[in-house]
Length: 367
Image (tube, rainbow, N blue to C red; front, side, top):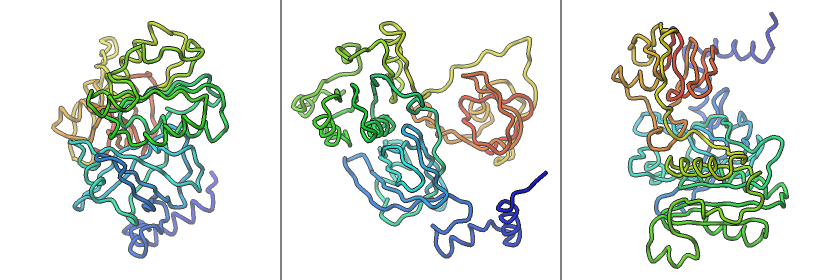
Protein backbone atom coordinates (compact mmCIF):
# COMPACT_ATOMS: atom_id res chain seq x y z
CA UNK A 1 0.00 0.00 0.00
CA UNK A 2 1.46 3.36 -1.00
CA UNK A 3 0.91 6.61 0.89
CA UNK A 4 1.20 9.90 -0.94
CA UNK A 5 3.67 12.33 0.63
CA UNK A 6 1.20 15.28 1.02
CA UNK A 7 -1.22 13.06 2.92
CA UNK A 8 1.54 11.67 5.14
CA UNK A 9 2.91 15.16 5.80
CA UNK A 10 -0.57 16.43 6.70
CA UNK A 11 -1.07 13.57 9.14
CA UNK A 12 2.30 14.21 10.81
CA UNK A 13 1.62 17.96 11.15
CA UNK A 14 -1.83 17.40 12.62
CA UNK A 15 -0.46 14.79 15.05
CA UNK A 16 2.11 17.27 16.36
CA UNK A 17 -0.60 19.91 16.86
CA UNK A 18 -2.80 17.63 18.99
CA UNK A 19 -5.22 17.87 20.78
CA UNK A 20 -6.81 20.32 18.32
CA UNK A 21 -6.85 20.31 14.50
CA UNK A 22 -4.34 22.63 12.85
CA UNK A 23 -7.07 25.01 11.70
CA UNK A 24 -8.11 25.72 15.31
CA UNK A 25 -4.66 27.26 15.85
CA UNK A 26 -4.40 29.01 12.50
CA UNK A 27 -7.76 30.76 12.90
CA UNK A 28 -6.37 32.55 15.95
CA UNK A 29 -4.00 34.34 13.56
CA UNK A 30 -6.34 34.75 10.59
CA UNK A 31 -9.66 32.90 10.06
CA UNK A 32 -8.89 32.75 6.31
CA UNK A 33 -5.55 31.00 6.94
CA UNK A 34 -6.60 27.35 6.85
CA UNK A 35 -4.94 23.94 6.51
CA UNK A 36 -8.00 21.86 5.63
CA UNK A 37 -11.15 23.91 6.27
CA UNK A 38 -12.81 25.71 3.37
CA UNK A 39 -13.97 29.19 4.33
CA UNK A 40 -14.99 32.38 2.57
CA UNK A 41 -14.72 36.08 3.37
CA UNK A 42 -17.54 38.46 2.46
CA UNK A 43 -16.16 40.91 -0.11
CA UNK A 44 -19.37 42.77 -0.94
CA UNK A 45 -22.91 42.96 0.45
CA UNK A 46 -26.14 44.11 -1.19
CA UNK A 47 -29.72 44.15 0.06
CA UNK A 48 -31.67 44.39 -3.20
CA UNK A 49 -35.15 43.96 -1.67
CA UNK A 50 -36.75 44.20 1.75
CA UNK A 51 -36.37 40.44 2.27
CA UNK A 52 -33.18 39.51 0.43
CA UNK A 53 -29.45 39.67 0.99
CA UNK A 54 -26.78 39.27 -1.68
CA UNK A 55 -23.35 38.10 -0.56
CA UNK A 56 -20.22 38.00 -2.69
CA UNK A 57 -17.76 35.56 -1.15
CA UNK A 58 -14.02 35.09 -1.71
CA UNK A 59 -13.20 31.46 -0.80
CA UNK A 60 -9.95 30.12 0.58
CA UNK A 61 -7.50 28.15 -1.57
CA UNK A 62 -9.39 24.86 -1.08
CA UNK A 63 -12.32 26.02 -3.25
CA UNK A 64 -12.69 23.99 -6.46
CA UNK A 65 -15.33 26.11 -8.19
CA UNK A 66 -18.94 25.31 -9.03
CA UNK A 67 -21.06 24.17 -11.93
CA UNK A 68 -24.17 26.18 -12.76
CA UNK A 69 -27.11 24.92 -10.71
CA UNK A 70 -25.13 23.35 -7.86
CA UNK A 71 -25.44 24.32 -4.19
CA UNK A 72 -23.06 25.02 -1.32
CA UNK A 73 -23.42 24.80 2.43
CA UNK A 74 -22.78 28.03 4.31
CA UNK A 75 -21.92 27.80 8.02
CA UNK A 76 -22.41 30.77 10.31
CA UNK A 77 -22.00 31.07 14.08
CA UNK A 78 -24.93 32.69 15.89
CA UNK A 79 -24.64 33.19 19.65
CA UNK A 80 -21.85 30.63 19.85
CA UNK A 81 -23.74 27.94 17.92
CA UNK A 82 -22.77 26.94 14.38
CA UNK A 83 -25.65 26.69 11.91
CA UNK A 84 -25.40 25.39 8.37
CA UNK A 85 -27.75 26.13 5.48
CA UNK A 86 -27.69 25.34 1.77
CA UNK A 87 -27.80 27.96 -0.98
CA UNK A 88 -27.27 27.86 -4.74
CA UNK A 89 -24.72 30.30 -6.23
CA UNK A 90 -26.38 32.67 -8.68
CA UNK A 91 -23.25 33.56 -10.63
CA UNK A 92 -22.22 31.75 -13.79
CA UNK A 93 -20.15 28.58 -13.45
CA UNK A 94 -16.69 29.49 -12.21
CA UNK A 95 -13.40 27.79 -11.43
CA UNK A 96 -11.28 27.73 -8.33
CA UNK A 97 -10.33 31.40 -8.67
CA UNK A 98 -13.93 32.63 -8.90
CA UNK A 99 -16.12 34.31 -6.32
CA UNK A 100 -19.42 32.93 -5.02
CA UNK A 101 -22.60 34.99 -5.30
CA UNK A 102 -25.42 34.01 -2.95
CA UNK A 103 -28.80 35.70 -2.82
CA UNK A 104 -30.62 34.72 0.36
CA UNK A 105 -34.29 35.30 1.15
CA UNK A 106 -35.07 36.00 4.80
CA UNK A 107 -38.14 33.84 5.44
CA UNK A 108 -40.29 34.51 8.49
CA UNK A 109 -39.27 31.18 10.01
CA UNK A 110 -35.71 31.27 8.67
CA UNK A 111 -33.48 31.75 11.71
CA UNK A 112 -30.19 31.86 9.78
CA UNK A 113 -31.51 33.80 6.78
CA UNK A 114 -32.98 36.49 9.02
CA UNK A 115 -29.74 36.73 10.98
CA UNK A 116 -27.69 37.12 7.79
CA UNK A 117 -30.13 39.66 6.30
CA UNK A 118 -29.71 41.85 9.37
CA UNK A 119 -26.09 41.32 10.39
CA UNK A 120 -23.93 40.26 7.40
CA UNK A 121 -21.09 42.71 6.75
CA UNK A 122 -18.02 42.97 4.51
CA UNK A 123 -15.14 41.12 6.14
CA UNK A 124 -17.24 38.44 7.81
CA UNK A 125 -15.84 34.93 7.44
CA UNK A 126 -18.13 31.92 7.08
CA UNK A 127 -17.61 28.21 6.68
CA UNK A 128 -18.19 26.93 3.15
CA UNK A 129 -18.53 23.50 1.58
CA UNK A 130 -17.47 22.43 -1.88
CA UNK A 131 -20.24 22.76 -4.45
CA UNK A 132 -22.33 19.67 -5.10
CA UNK A 133 -25.63 18.61 -6.62
CA UNK A 134 -26.86 17.06 -9.87
CA UNK A 135 -29.19 19.88 -10.95
CA UNK A 136 -26.80 21.10 -13.66
CA UNK A 137 -26.64 21.71 -17.38
CA UNK A 138 -26.21 18.40 -19.26
CA UNK A 139 -22.63 17.71 -20.28
CA UNK A 140 -23.83 16.95 -23.81
CA UNK A 141 -25.42 20.39 -24.11
CA UNK A 142 -28.98 21.70 -23.99
CA UNK A 143 -31.69 22.07 -26.59
CA UNK A 144 -34.02 25.10 -26.46
CA UNK A 145 -33.72 25.34 -22.65
CA UNK A 146 -36.74 26.39 -20.61
CA UNK A 147 -36.10 27.64 -17.06
CA UNK A 148 -39.09 27.75 -14.69
CA UNK A 149 -38.44 29.02 -11.17
CA UNK A 150 -40.29 30.43 -8.22
CA UNK A 151 -39.08 32.47 -5.26
CA UNK A 152 -35.52 31.62 -4.21
CA UNK A 153 -35.45 28.90 -6.87
CA UNK A 154 -34.31 31.62 -9.24
CA UNK A 155 -30.65 31.36 -8.16
CA UNK A 156 -29.69 28.01 -9.78
CA UNK A 157 -31.76 28.89 -12.86
CA UNK A 158 -30.04 32.27 -13.15
CA UNK A 159 -26.65 30.63 -12.76
CA UNK A 160 -27.44 28.38 -15.73
CA UNK A 161 -28.76 31.30 -17.77
CA UNK A 162 -25.68 33.41 -17.05
CA UNK A 163 -23.45 30.46 -17.95
CA UNK A 164 -25.16 29.98 -21.31
CA UNK A 165 -25.02 33.70 -22.10
CA UNK A 166 -21.31 33.87 -21.16
CA UNK A 167 -20.63 30.91 -23.47
CA UNK A 168 -22.29 32.69 -26.39
CA UNK A 169 -25.30 30.38 -26.60
CA UNK A 170 -27.54 31.91 -29.29
CA UNK A 171 -30.39 29.41 -29.66
CA UNK A 172 -33.79 30.22 -28.10
CA UNK A 173 -33.92 30.35 -24.28
CA UNK A 174 -37.11 30.76 -22.25
CA UNK A 175 -36.89 32.04 -18.68
CA UNK A 176 -40.09 31.95 -16.62
CA UNK A 177 -40.10 33.17 -13.03
CA UNK A 178 -42.75 33.59 -10.35
CA UNK A 179 -42.43 36.12 -7.54
CA UNK A 180 -44.96 37.56 -5.14
CA UNK A 181 -44.55 41.15 -6.36
CA UNK A 182 -42.11 43.05 -8.63
CA UNK A 183 -40.40 44.65 -5.63
CA UNK A 184 -39.55 41.18 -4.27
CA UNK A 185 -37.79 40.02 -7.46
CA UNK A 186 -34.13 40.61 -6.62
CA UNK A 187 -32.87 40.15 -10.20
CA UNK A 188 -35.64 41.99 -12.03
CA UNK A 189 -33.43 44.73 -13.50
CA UNK A 190 -30.74 42.28 -14.67
CA UNK A 191 -33.24 39.91 -16.26
CA UNK A 192 -34.88 42.78 -18.11
CA UNK A 193 -31.49 44.00 -19.35
CA UNK A 194 -30.48 40.49 -20.46
CA UNK A 195 -33.73 40.11 -22.37
CA UNK A 196 -33.20 43.44 -24.13
CA UNK A 197 -29.60 42.56 -25.05
CA UNK A 198 -30.33 39.02 -26.28
CA UNK A 199 -33.20 38.73 -28.78
CA UNK A 200 -33.26 34.93 -28.41
CA UNK A 201 -34.05 35.19 -24.68
CA UNK A 202 -37.79 34.99 -24.03
CA UNK A 203 -38.34 36.43 -20.53
CA UNK A 204 -41.71 35.75 -18.88
CA UNK A 205 -42.29 37.17 -15.38
CA UNK A 206 -45.39 36.43 -13.33
CA UNK A 207 -46.48 37.79 -9.98
CA UNK A 208 -48.68 35.79 -7.65
CA UNK A 209 -50.15 38.71 -5.73
CA UNK A 210 -52.46 40.96 -7.71
CA UNK A 211 -51.67 44.47 -6.45
CA UNK A 212 -51.42 47.86 -8.12
CA UNK A 213 -47.67 47.24 -8.35
CA UNK A 214 -48.11 43.99 -10.28
CA UNK A 215 -50.68 45.49 -12.62
CA UNK A 216 -48.20 48.18 -13.68
CA UNK A 217 -45.23 45.84 -14.08
CA UNK A 218 -45.84 44.79 -17.72
CA UNK A 219 -45.91 41.14 -16.68
CA UNK A 220 -48.38 38.36 -16.02
CA UNK A 221 -50.29 37.78 -12.81
CA UNK A 222 -51.08 34.41 -11.25
CA UNK A 223 -49.61 30.99 -10.55
CA UNK A 224 -48.35 28.54 -13.16
CA UNK A 225 -50.63 27.29 -15.91
CA UNK A 226 -49.77 25.71 -19.23
CA UNK A 227 -50.81 28.92 -20.98
CA UNK A 228 -47.77 30.63 -19.51
CA UNK A 229 -45.59 28.48 -21.78
CA UNK A 230 -47.55 29.13 -24.97
CA UNK A 231 -45.41 29.68 -28.06
CA UNK A 232 -42.11 28.22 -26.85
CA UNK A 233 -39.94 27.10 -29.75
CA UNK A 234 -39.58 23.34 -30.28
CA UNK A 235 -41.31 22.64 -27.00
CA UNK A 236 -41.53 18.86 -27.37
CA UNK A 237 -37.75 18.49 -27.49
CA UNK A 238 -36.83 21.09 -24.88
CA UNK A 239 -34.61 20.74 -21.83
CA UNK A 240 -36.75 22.05 -18.97
CA UNK A 241 -35.22 23.08 -15.63
CA UNK A 242 -37.65 23.66 -12.78
CA UNK A 243 -36.82 24.84 -9.26
CA UNK A 244 -39.14 26.33 -6.68
CA UNK A 245 -41.87 25.61 -4.14
CA UNK A 246 -43.55 22.19 -4.23
CA UNK A 247 -46.84 23.50 -5.66
CA UNK A 248 -45.05 25.06 -8.64
CA UNK A 249 -42.99 21.97 -9.31
CA UNK A 250 -45.98 19.65 -9.09
CA UNK A 251 -47.91 21.82 -11.54
CA UNK A 252 -45.02 21.91 -14.02
CA UNK A 253 -44.47 18.13 -13.77
CA UNK A 254 -48.16 17.49 -14.38
CA UNK A 255 -48.24 19.78 -17.38
CA UNK A 256 -45.24 18.20 -19.08
CA UNK A 257 -46.34 14.64 -18.37
CA UNK A 258 -49.64 15.36 -20.09
CA UNK A 259 -48.80 17.83 -22.83
CA UNK A 260 -45.12 17.30 -23.69
CA UNK A 261 -43.98 13.90 -22.39
CA UNK A 262 -40.93 13.84 -24.65
CA UNK A 263 -39.45 16.99 -23.09
CA UNK A 264 -36.55 16.42 -20.70
CA UNK A 265 -37.48 17.84 -17.29
CA UNK A 266 -34.62 18.43 -14.84
CA UNK A 267 -35.36 19.29 -11.22
CA UNK A 268 -34.30 19.19 -7.61
CA UNK A 269 -36.20 17.09 -5.04
CA UNK A 270 -37.83 19.91 -3.08
CA UNK A 271 -40.20 17.80 -1.01
CA UNK A 272 -39.91 14.93 1.40
CA UNK A 273 -39.83 11.50 -0.16
CA UNK A 274 -43.11 9.62 -0.09
CA UNK A 275 -43.37 7.00 2.65
CA UNK A 276 -41.67 3.83 1.52
CA UNK A 277 -43.32 0.44 1.64
CA UNK A 278 -41.43 -2.13 3.66
CA UNK A 279 -41.13 -5.41 1.79
CA UNK A 280 -42.38 -8.16 4.15
CA UNK A 281 -40.14 -10.66 2.37
CA UNK A 282 -37.10 -8.58 3.28
CA UNK A 283 -37.61 -7.54 6.91
CA UNK A 284 -35.56 -4.63 8.17
CA UNK A 285 -32.98 -5.18 10.87
CA UNK A 286 -30.17 -3.43 12.67
CA UNK A 287 -29.78 -0.45 14.93
CA UNK A 288 -29.71 3.24 14.04
CA UNK A 289 -27.27 5.12 16.28
CA UNK A 290 -27.38 8.92 16.53
CA UNK A 291 -23.81 9.52 17.68
CA UNK A 292 -24.05 13.23 18.51
CA UNK A 293 -27.07 12.65 20.74
CA UNK A 294 -26.12 9.34 22.30
CA UNK A 295 -29.46 7.82 21.26
CA UNK A 296 -30.05 4.52 19.50
CA UNK A 297 -33.20 2.96 18.07
CA UNK A 298 -34.13 -0.23 16.30
CA UNK A 299 -34.23 0.33 12.55
CA UNK A 300 -37.86 0.28 11.35
CA UNK A 301 -37.14 0.83 7.64
CA UNK A 302 -38.25 4.45 7.36
CA UNK A 303 -35.99 7.33 6.31
CA UNK A 304 -33.36 8.45 8.79
CA UNK A 305 -35.14 11.80 9.21
CA UNK A 306 -38.42 10.09 10.15
CA UNK A 307 -36.69 7.74 12.57
CA UNK A 308 -34.70 10.59 14.13
CA UNK A 309 -37.87 12.57 14.77
CA UNK A 310 -39.58 9.49 16.23
CA UNK A 311 -36.63 9.16 18.59
CA UNK A 312 -37.30 12.67 19.89
CA UNK A 313 -34.56 14.40 17.89
CA UNK A 314 -34.98 17.53 15.78
CA UNK A 315 -32.31 17.53 13.07
CA UNK A 316 -32.19 20.60 10.84
CA UNK A 317 -34.62 20.08 8.00
CA UNK A 318 -36.21 22.47 5.52
CA UNK A 319 -37.78 19.82 3.26
CA UNK A 320 -41.31 20.62 4.37
CA UNK A 321 -40.71 24.28 3.51
CA UNK A 322 -39.31 23.51 0.06
CA UNK A 323 -35.69 24.04 1.13
CA UNK A 324 -33.74 21.09 -0.13
CA UNK A 325 -30.43 19.71 1.20
CA UNK A 326 -30.80 21.37 4.62
CA UNK A 327 -31.17 17.97 6.37
CA UNK A 328 -27.72 16.63 5.60
CA UNK A 329 -25.54 14.88 8.17
CA UNK A 330 -22.39 12.78 8.31
CA UNK A 331 -22.90 9.02 8.09
CA UNK A 332 -20.11 7.60 10.22
CA UNK A 333 -20.60 3.97 9.22
CA UNK A 334 -23.06 1.50 7.77
CA UNK A 335 -25.09 1.07 4.61
CA UNK A 336 -27.93 3.34 3.51
CA UNK A 337 -30.41 3.14 0.64
CA UNK A 338 -31.68 6.11 -1.36
CA UNK A 339 -35.46 5.63 -1.31
CA UNK A 340 -35.88 7.58 -4.54
CA UNK A 341 -33.39 5.65 -6.65
CA UNK A 342 -32.86 2.42 -4.73
CA UNK A 343 -29.08 2.93 -4.77
CA UNK A 344 -27.14 1.79 -1.71
CA UNK A 345 -24.07 3.47 -0.21
CA UNK A 346 -21.55 1.86 2.16
CA UNK A 347 -18.99 4.67 2.27
CA UNK A 348 -18.09 5.90 5.76
CA UNK A 349 -17.68 9.53 6.87
CA UNK A 350 -19.80 10.83 4.02
CA UNK A 351 -22.55 13.42 3.99
CA UNK A 352 -26.04 12.18 3.16
CA UNK A 353 -29.57 13.57 3.04
CA UNK A 354 -31.62 12.29 5.95
CA UNK A 355 -34.98 12.71 4.20
CA UNK A 356 -34.26 10.37 1.28
CA UNK A 357 -31.98 7.77 2.84
CA UNK A 358 -32.99 4.75 4.93
CA UNK A 359 -30.62 2.56 6.95
CA UNK A 360 -29.80 -0.96 5.82
CA UNK A 361 -28.69 -2.84 8.91
CA UNK A 362 -26.59 -1.02 11.54
CA UNK A 363 -25.93 2.65 10.77
CA UNK A 364 -24.20 5.41 12.74
CA UNK A 365 -25.23 8.94 11.84
CA UNK A 366 -23.85 12.16 13.33
CA UNK A 367 -27.11 13.65 14.62
